[in-house]
Length: 127
Image (cartoon, rainbow, N blue to C red):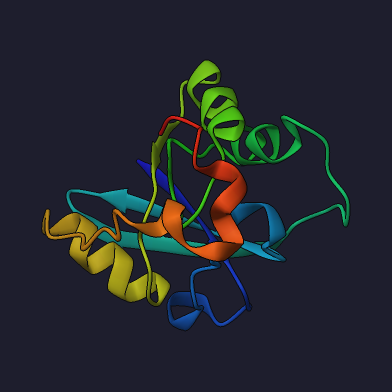
């Protein structure tokens, strides 16, 4: 399994997850095998501006199977689903913290993320 996590910086497992996947300058792509982290690759997002579907296609091109993010609009979730990529929203912390929790089925999800002011435009979207 290859997990994609939008991050604010390029610090490997210590990278901090981005609060909004669409504004993230980097994506950490993490290979998981037998419930263990095997490899991490942090890749800069190749475009400053993006249109609908650009980021889901970027993740697909980098062979992502799952996206773990904090905030994401319903339209983006739909694009990922159309590409066969599972989406988990509401995750926060470092890449390492998020992955460790995910692999132990203990990922702490902020289910209230859509109600925060910066995500107000997503309130009517379905996730």
